[in-house]
Amino acid sequence: MIPPDITPELLSVARGDAPADLLIRGGHVLNVFTGDIETANIAIFGGRIAGIGDYSFTRDTFNAAGLTLAPGLIDAHMHVESTMMPPAEFVRLAAPHGTIGAVFDPHEIANVLGIPGIRYLMNDAQDLPFEAMWALSSCVPSSPLETSGAVLNAGDLAPLFDDPRVVALAEMMNFPGAVNGDRDVLEKINLAQRRGRVVDGHAPGLTGKSLQAYAAAGISSDHECTTADEAREKLRAGMTIFIREGSAARNLEALLPLVTADNKHLFCFCTDDRHPADLKSEGHIDHVVRKAVTLGLNPAWALAMGSLHVARHYGRRDLGAIAPGCRASLMAFDLQNPALPRVVWHNGLVIARDGEYLPPRRPATPLPGGGGVVLPRGLGQGSFRVPAASAGDLRVIHMHPHQIVTGELRMPGRVQDGAYVQDTRHDILKLAVIERHRGSGNIGLGFVHGFRLKRGAIASTVGHDSHNLAVVGTNDADMLLAARTLEACGGGQCAVADGSPLAVLPLPIAGLMSDRPAPELIAAQRRLLDAASTLGYPHDDPFMPLSFLVLPVIPALKVTDLGLVDVGAFRVVPIQCA
Image (spheres, rainbow, N blue to C red):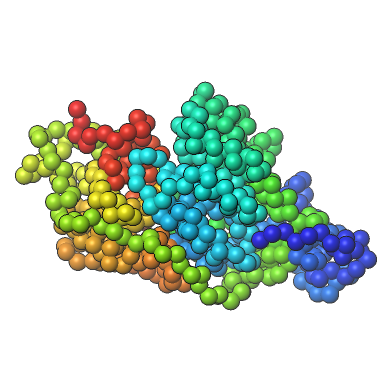
Protein backbone atom coordinates (compact mmCIF):
# COMPACT_ATOMS: atom_id res chain seq x y z
CA MET A 1 0.00 0.00 0.00
CA ILE A 2 1.45 3.38 -1.00
CA PRO A 3 1.98 5.89 1.85
CA PRO A 4 -0.61 8.68 1.91
CA ASP A 5 0.74 12.18 1.40
CA ILE A 6 1.62 14.44 4.32
CA THR A 7 -1.16 17.04 4.49
CA PRO A 8 -1.58 20.44 6.15
CA GLU A 9 -4.46 18.91 8.13
CA LEU A 10 -2.14 16.30 9.65
CA LEU A 11 0.21 19.03 10.80
CA SER A 12 -2.71 21.00 12.27
CA VAL A 13 -3.54 17.96 14.41
CA ALA A 14 0.14 17.60 15.36
CA ARG A 15 0.16 21.23 16.55
CA GLY A 16 -2.99 20.65 18.56
CA ASP A 17 -5.02 23.05 16.42
CA ALA A 18 -7.42 20.47 14.95
CA PRO A 19 -9.09 17.29 16.18
CA ALA A 20 -7.56 13.86 15.64
CA ASP A 21 -9.58 11.17 13.91
CA LEU A 22 -8.67 8.86 16.79
CA LEU A 23 -6.98 9.32 20.13
CA ILE A 24 -5.44 6.21 21.71
CA ARG A 25 -5.47 7.37 25.30
CA GLY A 26 -3.43 6.45 28.34
CA GLY A 27 -1.34 3.54 27.03
CA HIS A 28 2.29 2.72 27.79
CA VAL A 29 3.94 3.74 24.51
CA LEU A 30 7.15 1.92 23.54
CA ASN A 31 9.71 4.09 21.77
CA VAL A 32 11.74 1.72 19.58
CA PHE A 33 14.33 4.43 18.91
CA THR A 34 15.36 4.83 22.55
CA GLY A 35 13.82 1.85 24.31
CA ASP A 36 11.85 4.17 26.59
CA ILE A 37 8.25 3.57 27.63
CA GLU A 38 6.05 6.55 28.47
CA THR A 39 2.39 6.90 29.33
CA ALA A 40 0.97 9.16 26.64
CA ASN A 41 -1.83 9.71 24.15
CA ILE A 42 -1.41 8.96 20.43
CA ALA A 43 -3.17 11.32 18.03
CA ILE A 44 -4.01 9.77 14.66
CA PHE A 45 -5.21 11.56 11.54
CA GLY A 46 -5.58 10.36 7.95
CA GLY A 47 -4.00 7.01 8.70
CA ARG A 48 -0.85 8.55 10.17
CA ILE A 49 0.35 9.35 13.64
CA ALA A 50 0.19 13.10 14.16
CA GLY A 51 1.84 13.15 17.56
CA ILE A 52 2.45 11.48 20.91
CA GLY A 53 1.90 13.41 24.13
CA ASP A 54 -0.89 15.18 26.02
CA TYR A 55 -3.29 15.39 23.07
CA SER A 56 -7.01 15.56 23.88
CA PHE A 57 -8.76 17.17 20.88
CA THR A 58 -10.35 14.23 19.00
CA ARG A 59 -13.40 12.85 17.26
CA ASP A 60 -13.00 9.35 18.65
CA THR A 61 -11.15 7.72 21.56
CA PHE A 62 -9.74 4.30 22.42
CA ASN A 63 -8.95 3.73 26.08
CA ALA A 64 -5.57 1.95 26.26
CA ALA A 65 -5.05 2.32 30.02
CA GLY A 66 -2.99 -0.62 31.30
CA LEU A 67 -1.95 -1.73 27.82
CA THR A 68 1.44 -1.47 26.14
CA LEU A 69 1.52 0.02 22.65
CA ALA A 70 4.16 -1.02 20.15
CA PRO A 71 4.60 -0.71 16.39
CA GLY A 72 3.07 -3.42 14.26
CA LEU A 73 5.44 -6.21 13.27
CA ILE A 74 7.06 -6.80 9.87
CA ASP A 75 8.58 -10.01 8.54
CA ALA A 76 11.86 -9.10 6.83
CA HIS A 77 11.80 -12.05 4.44
CA MET A 78 9.22 -14.71 3.77
CA HIS A 79 7.65 -16.75 1.00
CA VAL A 80 3.91 -16.45 1.45
CA GLU A 81 3.49 -19.52 -0.74
CA SER A 82 5.07 -21.57 2.05
CA THR A 83 2.07 -20.83 4.24
CA MET A 84 0.07 -22.63 1.51
CA MET A 85 -2.18 -19.58 1.36
CA PRO A 86 -2.34 -16.60 -0.99
CA PRO A 87 -1.77 -13.21 0.71
CA ALA A 88 -5.43 -12.40 1.42
CA GLU A 89 -5.87 -15.58 3.45
CA PHE A 90 -2.42 -15.33 5.06
CA VAL A 91 -3.27 -11.89 6.43
CA ARG A 92 -6.37 -13.29 8.13
CA LEU A 93 -4.07 -15.47 10.26
CA ALA A 94 -1.09 -13.14 10.63
CA ALA A 95 -2.75 -9.80 11.43
CA PRO A 96 -4.27 -10.93 14.76
CA HIS A 97 -0.69 -11.69 15.85
CA GLY A 98 0.33 -8.09 15.27
CA THR A 99 1.81 -8.51 11.79
CA ILE A 100 1.06 -5.42 9.74
CA GLY A 101 3.55 -6.04 6.95
CA ALA A 102 5.97 -8.43 5.29
CA VAL A 103 8.57 -8.44 2.56
CA PHE A 104 7.38 -11.20 0.26
CA ASP A 105 9.76 -12.97 -2.08
CA PRO A 106 7.45 -14.72 -4.59
CA HIS A 107 10.15 -16.97 -6.02
CA GLU A 108 8.18 -20.13 -5.25
CA ILE A 109 5.36 -19.28 -7.61
CA ALA A 110 7.81 -17.53 -9.96
CA ASN A 111 9.64 -20.82 -10.45
CA VAL A 112 6.35 -22.43 -11.45
CA LEU A 113 4.55 -19.70 -13.42
CA GLY A 114 7.05 -16.88 -13.95
CA ILE A 115 5.87 -13.26 -14.12
CA PRO A 116 2.13 -14.20 -14.23
CA GLY A 117 2.61 -15.98 -10.90
CA ILE A 118 4.26 -12.94 -9.33
CA ARG A 119 1.51 -10.67 -10.60
CA TYR A 120 -1.13 -13.04 -9.24
CA LEU A 121 0.26 -12.72 -5.70
CA MET A 122 0.71 -8.96 -6.01
CA ASN A 123 -2.88 -8.59 -7.23
CA ASP A 124 -4.15 -10.76 -4.38
CA ALA A 125 -2.38 -8.52 -1.86
CA GLN A 126 -3.64 -5.29 -3.42
CA ASP A 127 -5.74 -3.13 -1.08
CA LEU A 128 -5.43 -5.43 1.91
CA PRO A 129 -5.12 -3.72 5.31
CA PHE A 130 -1.49 -4.82 5.27
CA GLU A 131 1.89 -3.56 4.06
CA ALA A 132 2.71 -6.11 1.37
CA MET A 133 6.19 -5.22 0.14
CA TRP A 134 7.81 -7.22 -2.62
CA ALA A 135 11.32 -8.41 -3.33
CA LEU A 136 11.67 -9.54 -6.92
CA SER A 137 12.92 -13.07 -7.31
CA SER A 138 16.57 -13.07 -8.39
CA CYS A 139 17.10 -16.75 -9.12
CA VAL A 140 14.48 -18.40 -11.30
CA PRO A 141 15.62 -21.14 -11.46
CA SER A 142 17.82 -21.18 -8.38
CA SER A 143 20.56 -23.01 -10.28
CA PRO A 144 21.20 -24.75 -13.62
CA LEU A 145 21.05 -28.09 -11.80
CA GLU A 146 17.24 -28.31 -11.93
CA THR A 147 14.34 -27.67 -14.31
CA SER A 148 11.87 -24.99 -13.32
CA GLY A 149 8.60 -23.91 -14.88
CA ALA A 150 10.00 -20.52 -15.86
CA VAL A 151 13.24 -18.60 -16.39
CA LEU A 152 13.45 -14.92 -15.44
CA ASN A 153 16.22 -12.58 -16.55
CA ALA A 154 16.83 -8.93 -15.77
CA GLY A 155 14.70 -7.83 -18.71
CA ASP A 156 11.75 -9.80 -17.37
CA LEU A 157 12.08 -8.18 -13.94
CA ALA A 158 12.70 -4.62 -15.09
CA PRO A 159 9.04 -3.56 -15.60
CA LEU A 160 8.12 -4.74 -12.09
CA PHE A 161 10.65 -2.32 -10.56
CA ASP A 162 8.31 0.47 -11.71
CA ASP A 163 5.86 -0.68 -9.02
CA PRO A 164 6.48 1.29 -5.78
CA ARG A 165 5.51 -1.80 -3.75
CA VAL A 166 8.75 -3.41 -4.90
CA VAL A 167 11.46 -2.71 -2.31
CA ALA A 168 14.29 -5.09 -3.20
CA LEU A 169 15.87 -7.70 -5.39
CA ALA A 170 15.24 -10.86 -3.39
CA GLU A 171 17.79 -13.26 -1.95
CA MET A 172 20.68 -13.74 -4.37
CA MET A 173 20.94 -17.52 -3.99
CA ASN A 174 23.37 -17.81 -6.86
CA PHE A 175 26.21 -16.64 -4.65
CA PRO A 176 28.83 -18.39 -6.84
CA GLY A 177 27.55 -16.28 -9.72
CA ALA A 178 27.75 -13.09 -7.67
CA VAL A 179 31.21 -13.93 -6.33
CA ASN A 180 32.56 -14.77 -9.80
CA GLY A 181 30.96 -11.84 -11.57
CA ASP A 182 28.45 -13.78 -13.67
CA ARG A 183 27.10 -11.40 -16.29
CA ASP A 184 23.41 -12.25 -15.81
CA VAL A 185 23.68 -12.04 -12.02
CA LEU A 186 25.38 -8.65 -12.11
CA GLU A 187 22.81 -7.38 -14.60
CA LYS A 188 20.05 -8.08 -12.04
CA ILE A 189 22.04 -6.57 -9.17
CA ASN A 190 22.85 -3.42 -11.12
CA LEU A 191 19.24 -3.11 -12.29
CA ALA A 192 18.02 -3.12 -8.67
CA GLN A 193 20.64 -0.66 -7.50
CA ARG A 194 19.98 1.72 -10.37
CA ARG A 195 16.32 1.67 -9.36
CA GLY A 196 17.28 2.50 -5.75
CA ARG A 197 16.37 -0.91 -4.29
CA VAL A 198 18.43 -3.01 -1.91
CA VAL A 199 19.73 -6.44 -2.89
CA ASP A 200 19.16 -9.16 -0.31
CA GLY A 201 21.40 -12.15 0.13
CA HIS A 202 21.42 -15.89 0.62
CA ALA A 203 24.90 -17.30 1.19
CA PRO A 204 25.00 -20.21 3.62
CA GLY A 205 28.50 -20.81 4.99
CA LEU A 206 30.16 -18.24 2.72
CA THR A 207 33.38 -16.95 4.26
CA GLY A 208 36.76 -15.38 3.54
CA LYS A 209 37.49 -13.61 0.28
CA SER A 210 34.44 -15.13 -1.37
CA LEU A 211 32.29 -13.37 1.23
CA GLN A 212 34.20 -10.15 0.60
CA ALA A 213 33.41 -10.44 -3.11
CA TYR A 214 29.75 -11.20 -2.36
CA ALA A 215 29.46 -8.09 -0.19
CA ALA A 216 31.37 -6.05 -2.78
CA ALA A 217 28.68 -7.03 -5.29
CA GLY A 218 26.26 -4.93 -3.25
CA ILE A 219 24.51 -7.64 -1.25
CA SER A 220 22.94 -5.99 1.79
CA SER A 221 21.74 -8.85 4.00
CA ASP A 222 21.76 -12.55 4.75
CA HIS A 223 19.22 -14.84 6.41
CA GLU A 224 21.11 -18.13 6.11
CA CYS A 225 23.51 -17.80 9.06
CA THR A 226 23.46 -20.82 11.37
CA THR A 227 26.37 -19.91 13.70
CA ALA A 228 27.42 -16.78 15.53
CA ASP A 229 30.85 -16.87 13.88
CA GLU A 230 29.28 -16.89 10.42
CA ALA A 231 26.97 -14.00 11.28
CA ARG A 232 29.81 -12.02 12.89
CA GLU A 233 31.91 -12.22 9.73
CA LYS A 234 28.97 -11.06 7.62
CA LEU A 235 28.29 -8.18 10.00
CA ARG A 236 31.89 -7.09 9.63
CA ALA A 237 31.41 -7.13 5.86
CA GLY A 238 28.61 -4.58 6.29
CA MET A 239 25.64 -6.91 5.93
CA THR A 240 22.41 -6.83 7.93
CA ILE A 241 21.60 -10.18 9.53
CA PHE A 242 18.06 -11.49 9.33
CA ILE A 243 17.66 -13.95 12.20
CA ARG A 244 15.42 -16.67 10.85
CA GLU A 245 13.00 -18.55 13.06
CA GLY A 246 10.45 -20.31 10.91
CA SER A 247 8.94 -23.74 10.69
CA ALA A 248 11.78 -25.29 8.70
CA ALA A 249 14.96 -23.51 9.82
CA ARG A 250 15.38 -22.14 13.33
CA ASN A 251 18.48 -20.09 14.00
CA LEU A 252 17.42 -17.78 16.83
CA GLU A 253 19.16 -19.56 19.69
CA ALA A 254 22.45 -19.82 17.80
CA LEU A 255 22.56 -16.18 16.68
CA LEU A 256 20.97 -14.23 19.51
CA PRO A 257 24.13 -14.07 21.70
CA LEU A 258 25.72 -11.97 18.96
CA VAL A 259 23.26 -9.08 19.43
CA THR A 260 24.66 -6.17 21.47
CA ALA A 261 23.70 -2.58 22.20
CA ASP A 262 26.23 -1.45 19.58
CA ASN A 263 25.12 -3.70 16.72
CA LYS A 264 21.44 -4.39 17.39
CA HIS A 265 20.37 -2.05 14.57
CA LEU A 266 21.96 -4.52 12.12
CA PHE A 267 19.56 -7.35 13.03
CA CYS A 268 16.03 -8.10 11.84
CA PHE A 269 13.67 -11.03 12.34
CA CYS A 270 12.27 -13.17 9.55
CA THR A 271 10.48 -16.50 9.21
CA ASP A 272 11.34 -17.38 5.59
CA ASP A 273 8.88 -20.32 5.62
CA ARG A 274 5.98 -20.65 8.06
CA HIS A 275 3.71 -23.66 8.45
CA PRO A 276 -0.02 -22.63 8.46
CA ALA A 277 -0.77 -24.53 11.69
CA ASP A 278 2.25 -22.93 13.39
CA LEU A 279 1.07 -19.54 12.20
CA LYS A 280 -2.35 -20.14 13.73
CA SER A 281 -1.24 -21.62 17.05
CA GLU A 282 2.19 -20.10 17.79
CA GLY A 283 2.07 -16.91 15.81
CA HIS A 284 4.31 -15.13 13.39
CA ILE A 285 6.99 -12.51 14.17
CA ASP A 286 5.34 -12.09 17.59
CA HIS A 287 6.39 -15.69 18.31
CA VAL A 288 10.00 -14.84 17.42
CA VAL A 289 9.90 -11.72 19.62
CA ARG A 290 8.53 -13.65 22.60
CA LYS A 291 11.08 -16.41 22.19
CA ALA A 292 13.93 -13.90 21.93
CA VAL A 293 12.79 -12.20 25.13
CA THR A 294 12.54 -15.57 26.87
CA LEU A 295 16.14 -16.21 25.81
CA GLY A 296 17.21 -12.96 27.46
CA LEU A 297 17.00 -10.28 24.76
CA ASN A 298 15.93 -6.80 25.83
CA PRO A 299 12.19 -6.60 24.96
CA ALA A 300 12.55 -3.17 23.34
CA TRP A 301 15.37 -4.47 21.15
CA ALA A 302 13.33 -7.52 20.19
CA LEU A 303 10.35 -5.41 19.14
CA ALA A 304 12.61 -3.05 17.18
CA MET A 305 14.18 -6.02 15.35
CA GLY A 306 10.67 -7.07 14.36
CA SER A 307 9.58 -3.62 13.18
CA LEU A 308 11.83 -0.54 12.96
CA HIS A 309 14.97 -2.28 11.72
CA VAL A 310 13.06 -4.02 8.94
CA ALA A 311 11.39 -0.81 7.81
CA ARG A 312 14.67 1.10 7.76
CA HIS A 313 16.49 -1.66 5.87
CA TYR A 314 13.93 -1.34 3.08
CA GLY A 315 13.76 2.45 3.12
CA ARG A 316 10.27 2.66 4.62
CA ARG A 317 10.66 5.49 7.11
CA ASP A 318 6.87 5.66 7.46
CA LEU A 319 6.75 2.22 9.12
CA GLY A 320 8.13 0.45 12.15
CA ALA A 321 7.66 3.00 14.92
CA ILE A 322 5.10 4.91 16.94
CA ALA A 323 6.35 8.33 15.94
CA PRO A 324 5.05 11.53 14.30
CA GLY A 325 4.43 11.03 10.59
CA CYS A 326 4.55 7.24 10.71
CA ARG A 327 1.68 5.10 9.58
CA ALA A 328 -0.74 4.38 12.40
CA SER A 329 -0.06 0.64 12.22
CA LEU A 330 0.43 -0.57 15.75
CA MET A 331 -0.70 -3.05 18.37
CA ALA A 332 -1.85 -2.95 21.98
CA PHE A 333 -1.07 -5.87 24.28
CA ASP A 334 -1.22 -6.80 27.93
CA LEU A 335 2.27 -7.32 29.40
CA GLN A 336 0.80 -9.90 31.77
CA ASN A 337 -0.49 -11.92 28.80
CA PRO A 338 1.55 -10.95 25.70
CA ALA A 339 0.74 -14.09 23.69
CA LEU A 340 -1.81 -12.29 21.52
CA PRO A 341 -2.36 -8.54 20.95
CA ARG A 342 -5.61 -7.18 22.31
CA VAL A 343 -6.00 -4.80 19.35
CA VAL A 344 -4.16 -4.32 16.04
CA TRP A 345 -4.51 -1.17 13.94
CA HIS A 346 -3.51 -0.59 10.32
CA ASN A 347 -3.52 3.02 9.11
CA GLY A 348 -5.55 3.96 12.17
CA LEU A 349 -8.30 1.36 11.64
CA VAL A 350 -8.81 -1.66 13.89
CA ILE A 351 -8.18 -4.81 11.84
CA ALA A 352 -7.98 -7.41 14.64
CA ARG A 353 -9.23 -7.70 18.19
CA ASP A 354 -8.49 -10.49 20.70
CA GLY A 355 -7.33 -12.88 18.01
CA GLU A 356 -10.14 -12.23 15.54
CA TYR A 357 -9.51 -10.70 12.12
CA LEU A 358 -12.31 -8.20 11.50
CA PRO A 359 -12.43 -7.32 7.76
CA PRO A 360 -14.76 -9.53 5.72
CA ARG A 361 -13.40 -12.20 3.39
CA ARG A 362 -13.27 -10.81 -0.12
CA PRO A 363 -13.78 -12.57 -3.47
CA ALA A 364 -10.92 -14.74 -4.66
CA THR A 365 -8.40 -13.28 -7.08
CA PRO A 366 -8.64 -14.92 -10.54
CA LEU A 367 -6.05 -17.67 -10.83
CA PRO A 368 -3.35 -17.76 -13.49
CA GLY A 369 -3.38 -20.73 -15.82
CA GLY A 370 -0.97 -23.64 -15.54
CA GLY A 371 0.99 -24.86 -12.58
CA GLY A 372 -0.42 -28.39 -12.43
CA VAL A 373 1.29 -31.76 -12.72
CA VAL A 374 2.48 -33.13 -16.07
CA LEU A 375 4.00 -36.57 -15.51
CA PRO A 376 6.21 -38.37 -18.03
CA ARG A 377 4.47 -40.58 -20.54
CA GLY A 378 4.82 -44.22 -19.60
CA LEU A 379 5.67 -43.49 -15.97
CA GLY A 380 5.74 -46.82 -14.13
CA GLN A 381 7.44 -48.67 -11.33
CA GLY A 382 10.44 -49.21 -13.58
CA SER A 383 10.91 -45.42 -13.73
CA PHE A 384 12.19 -45.56 -10.15
CA ARG A 385 14.74 -48.33 -10.77
CA VAL A 386 18.37 -47.63 -9.77
CA PRO A 387 20.57 -50.14 -11.65
CA ALA A 388 23.43 -51.73 -9.71
CA ALA A 389 26.32 -53.33 -11.56
CA SER A 390 27.54 -54.73 -8.25
CA ALA A 391 26.94 -54.21 -4.56
CA GLY A 392 28.74 -51.25 -3.01
CA ASP A 393 28.41 -48.11 -0.91
CA LEU A 394 25.87 -45.43 -1.81
CA ARG A 395 25.96 -41.70 -1.40
CA VAL A 396 23.01 -41.25 0.95
CA ILE A 397 21.48 -37.92 1.94
CA HIS A 398 21.43 -37.45 5.71
CA MET A 399 18.22 -35.54 6.38
CA HIS A 400 18.08 -33.29 9.46
CA PRO A 401 14.39 -32.87 10.41
CA HIS A 402 14.75 -29.28 11.68
CA GLN A 403 17.39 -27.88 9.31
CA ILE A 404 17.41 -27.27 5.59
CA VAL A 405 21.06 -28.30 5.26
CA THR A 406 21.78 -31.99 4.72
CA GLY A 407 24.74 -34.25 5.30
CA GLU A 408 26.27 -37.00 3.18
CA LEU A 409 26.54 -40.59 4.38
CA ARG A 410 28.31 -43.53 2.79
CA MET A 411 26.13 -46.60 3.44
CA PRO A 412 26.08 -50.13 2.01
CA GLY A 413 23.46 -50.46 -0.69
CA ARG A 414 20.95 -53.29 -0.76
CA VAL A 415 20.80 -54.97 -4.17
CA GLN A 416 17.84 -56.95 -5.49
CA ASP A 417 17.36 -58.16 -9.08
CA GLY A 418 20.26 -56.02 -10.28
CA ALA A 419 19.05 -52.76 -8.74
CA TYR A 420 19.58 -50.83 -5.54
CA VAL A 421 16.40 -50.93 -3.47
CA GLN A 422 15.06 -49.41 -0.27
CA ASP A 423 16.29 -50.79 3.06
CA THR A 424 13.83 -49.88 5.82
CA ARG A 425 15.87 -51.82 8.39
CA HIS A 426 18.71 -49.31 7.99
CA ASP A 427 16.42 -46.38 7.10
CA ILE A 428 17.62 -46.07 3.51
CA LEU A 429 14.65 -44.86 1.48
CA LYS A 430 14.41 -43.95 -2.17
CA LEU A 431 13.89 -40.32 -3.21
CA ALA A 432 12.63 -39.41 -6.68
CA VAL A 433 12.16 -35.96 -8.20
CA ILE A 434 9.92 -35.86 -11.27
CA GLU A 435 9.89 -32.77 -13.48
CA ARG A 436 6.23 -31.68 -13.55
CA HIS A 437 6.10 -28.41 -15.51
CA ARG A 438 7.08 -29.25 -19.08
CA GLY A 439 6.61 -32.99 -19.46
CA SER A 440 10.34 -33.41 -20.12
CA GLY A 441 10.42 -36.90 -18.63
CA ASN A 442 13.29 -36.01 -16.28
CA ILE A 443 13.42 -38.12 -13.13
CA GLY A 444 16.24 -37.72 -10.61
CA LEU A 445 16.86 -40.52 -8.12
CA GLY A 446 18.73 -40.86 -4.84
CA PHE A 447 18.60 -42.36 -1.39
CA VAL A 448 17.89 -40.65 1.94
CA HIS A 449 18.37 -41.50 5.62
CA GLY A 450 16.31 -39.88 8.39
CA PHE A 451 12.64 -40.34 7.52
CA ARG A 452 12.34 -43.77 9.22
CA LEU A 453 9.27 -44.76 7.19
CA LYS A 454 8.41 -48.43 7.59
CA ARG A 455 5.81 -48.59 4.82
CA GLY A 456 4.25 -46.52 2.07
CA ALA A 457 5.36 -43.25 0.51
CA ILE A 458 4.82 -39.51 0.75
CA ALA A 459 4.90 -37.01 -2.10
CA SER A 460 4.73 -33.26 -2.60
CA THR A 461 4.75 -30.66 -5.36
CA VAL A 462 6.11 -28.16 -2.81
CA GLY A 463 9.83 -28.58 -3.47
CA HIS A 464 12.10 -25.57 -3.22
CA ASP A 465 12.74 -23.90 -5.50
CA SER A 466 11.59 -25.39 -8.78
CA HIS A 467 8.72 -27.26 -7.13
CA ASN A 468 8.89 -30.42 -9.11
CA LEU A 469 7.18 -33.51 -7.72
CA ALA A 470 9.25 -35.13 -4.96
CA VAL A 471 8.38 -38.54 -3.57
CA VAL A 472 10.14 -40.59 -0.90
CA GLY A 473 9.08 -44.15 -0.21
CA THR A 474 9.73 -47.63 1.02
CA ASN A 475 8.71 -49.28 -2.25
CA ASP A 476 8.38 -48.29 -5.90
CA ALA A 477 4.71 -49.26 -6.23
CA ASP A 478 3.60 -46.81 -3.55
CA MET A 479 5.94 -44.13 -4.93
CA LEU A 480 4.19 -44.45 -8.29
CA LEU A 481 0.77 -44.27 -6.62
CA ALA A 482 1.78 -41.12 -4.72
CA ALA A 483 2.86 -39.42 -7.94
CA ARG A 484 -0.37 -40.38 -9.71
CA THR A 485 -2.42 -39.16 -6.73
CA LEU A 486 -0.92 -35.68 -7.01
CA GLU A 487 -1.35 -35.68 -10.77
CA ALA A 488 -5.07 -36.27 -10.26
CA CYS A 489 -5.56 -33.31 -7.88
CA GLY A 490 -3.36 -30.86 -9.77
CA GLY A 491 -0.63 -30.75 -7.14
CA GLY A 492 -0.35 -30.86 -3.38
CA GLN A 493 0.84 -33.39 -0.83
CA CYS A 494 -0.18 -36.96 -0.04
CA ALA A 495 0.58 -40.06 1.99
CA VAL A 496 -0.10 -43.53 0.60
CA ALA A 497 0.47 -47.11 1.75
CA ASP A 498 -0.22 -50.61 0.54
CA GLY A 499 -1.70 -49.42 -2.73
CA SER A 500 -4.17 -46.89 -1.28
CA PRO A 501 -4.08 -43.13 -0.60
CA LEU A 502 -4.29 -42.40 3.14
CA ALA A 503 -4.62 -38.61 2.99
CA VAL A 504 -4.40 -35.92 0.31
CA LEU A 505 -3.89 -32.16 0.68
CA PRO A 506 -4.82 -30.56 -2.68
CA LEU A 507 -2.90 -27.37 -3.53
CA PRO A 508 -4.47 -26.31 -6.82
CA ILE A 509 -2.83 -22.86 -6.96
CA ALA A 510 0.40 -23.69 -8.82
CA GLY A 511 0.75 -26.87 -6.77
CA LEU A 512 1.75 -24.62 -3.87
CA MET A 513 -1.31 -23.05 -2.28
CA SER A 514 -4.83 -23.96 -1.26
CA ASP A 515 -7.95 -22.20 -2.46
CA ARG A 516 -9.77 -23.07 0.77
CA PRO A 517 -10.17 -20.96 3.95
CA ALA A 518 -7.36 -21.35 6.48
CA PRO A 519 -9.32 -23.49 8.98
CA GLU A 520 -10.11 -26.04 6.25
CA LEU A 521 -6.50 -26.03 5.06
CA ILE A 522 -5.15 -26.57 8.57
CA ALA A 523 -7.59 -29.41 9.24
CA ALA A 524 -6.66 -31.13 5.97
CA GLN A 525 -2.98 -30.74 6.69
CA ARG A 526 -3.44 -32.21 10.16
CA ARG A 527 -5.08 -35.28 8.64
CA LEU A 528 -2.14 -35.59 6.26
CA LEU A 529 0.45 -35.32 9.02
CA ASP A 530 -1.41 -37.87 11.12
CA ALA A 531 -1.39 -40.24 8.16
CA ALA A 532 2.35 -39.70 7.65
CA SER A 533 3.00 -40.55 11.28
CA THR A 534 1.33 -43.94 10.78
CA LEU A 535 4.00 -44.68 8.17
CA GLY A 536 6.68 -44.32 10.84
CA TYR A 537 7.84 -40.70 10.58
CA PRO A 538 8.87 -39.74 14.16
CA HIS A 539 8.63 -35.93 13.93
CA ASP A 540 5.78 -33.55 13.25
CA ASP A 541 6.05 -32.74 9.55
CA PRO A 542 7.99 -34.83 7.00
CA PHE A 543 6.90 -32.60 4.12
CA MET A 544 8.94 -29.61 5.29
CA PRO A 545 12.33 -31.39 5.15
CA LEU A 546 11.21 -33.15 1.96
CA SER A 547 10.64 -29.79 0.32
CA PHE A 548 14.28 -28.82 0.96
CA LEU A 549 15.85 -32.12 -0.09
CA VAL A 550 15.45 -30.90 -3.67
CA LEU A 551 17.07 -27.45 -3.22
CA PRO A 552 20.49 -27.52 -4.94
CA VAL A 553 21.81 -24.28 -3.43
CA ILE A 554 21.88 -25.48 0.20
CA PRO A 555 24.63 -28.00 1.16
CA ALA A 556 25.44 -30.74 1.05
CA LEU A 557 23.69 -33.45 -0.98
CA LYS A 558 20.34 -32.98 -2.78
CA VAL A 559 18.27 -34.51 -5.58
CA THR A 560 16.71 -32.62 -8.48
CA ASP A 561 15.03 -33.84 -11.64
CA LEU A 562 18.54 -33.99 -13.17
CA GLY A 563 19.91 -36.38 -10.56
CA LEU A 564 21.88 -36.48 -7.31
CA VAL A 565 23.56 -33.11 -6.72
CA ASP A 566 26.73 -32.46 -4.74
CA VAL A 567 26.08 -28.82 -3.82
CA GLY A 568 29.69 -28.10 -2.86
CA ALA A 569 30.98 -29.38 -6.19
CA PHE A 570 27.97 -27.80 -7.95
CA ARG A 571 27.39 -30.83 -10.17
CA VAL A 572 25.36 -33.99 -10.60
CA VAL A 573 27.18 -37.04 -9.19
CA PRO A 574 26.70 -40.82 -9.34
CA ILE A 575 24.64 -42.49 -6.61
CA GLN A 576 27.16 -45.28 -6.17
CA CYS A 577 30.46 -44.35 -4.55
CA ALA A 578 33.57 -44.83 -6.65
